[in-house]
Image 1 (cartoon, rainbow, N blue to C red):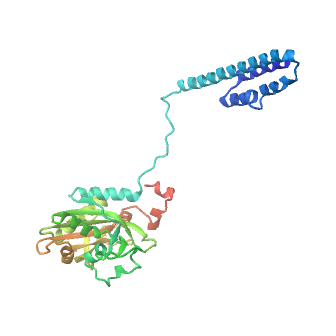
Image 2 (image 1 turned 135 degrees about the vertical axis):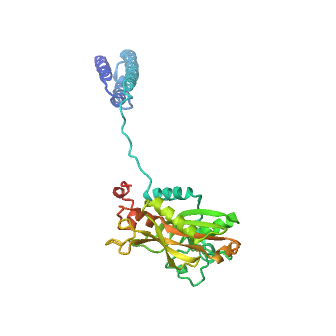
Image 3 (image 1 turned 90 degrees about the horizontal axis):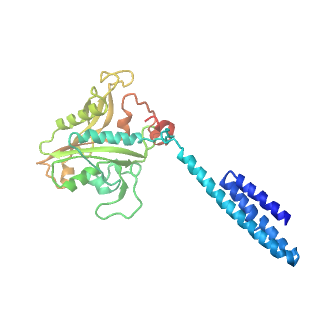
Length: 343
């Protein structure tokens, strides 16, 4: 009886002094658990004489109830103390700001390009990045033996060939968007810019297997090369700076006639020629007047309407910005945060 009385006093003192919920939980297990002290006293009950069992049992039951009540009160007290601490929290104190990310530099470039062309009436569109051969080649006046059809240049999807549209490919260029936009609108005027991913089997310091292009198309009555030149000069001045301008250099593309490579003047010498650029100009991308056969493919009369188109790489255009010194295009997609945080 005396041992039980001492246990009760010591247990209540320990419960009162508990500093945390975990400490209180440990005491609860120690005193009231299946293998706890109270159960040990209960096991000893059978060893007492009959006349003492009743008295000892009553005292043991009172001890158990006292411990349970003390634990409940202490648990409530600990919760109240925690709430009091929260009440005293200084809500005006500046918090720790989480790390803030930013848009990928190519996403930034795409948004800037879209905004530039929107200001002169171009409508931003987007068409499939998995395309049919007819849209990617046939409709664009590319014959069966054109080098771009070679598997080395184009990714062909391993699926059943469509009887009407041919093989399925990963879009090698955004020019297929010209055809789809003319089919959608059916009749000029048309003024669109298509920005999408493209895929080609090239991978080196100036090429990646996946890249982005922006494709411009204008079709209407009396559209001329002058309109094309004015548009490219406008883009150059807006994207690169007011002193930048473009020139047209004759070239050959199957879906435009006449065709041009668009060059932009060097940011250092502005076209005069220097040690960096040699000629004063850098190649920007391809362009030209829409080939009559391309217009015929979508039932637009080339005798009544004309148009121009251009298709340039987003990455290439962005890397030509002044003071942007990136010597390996693949770095853009390396996911190296040390590089990406600079933009």
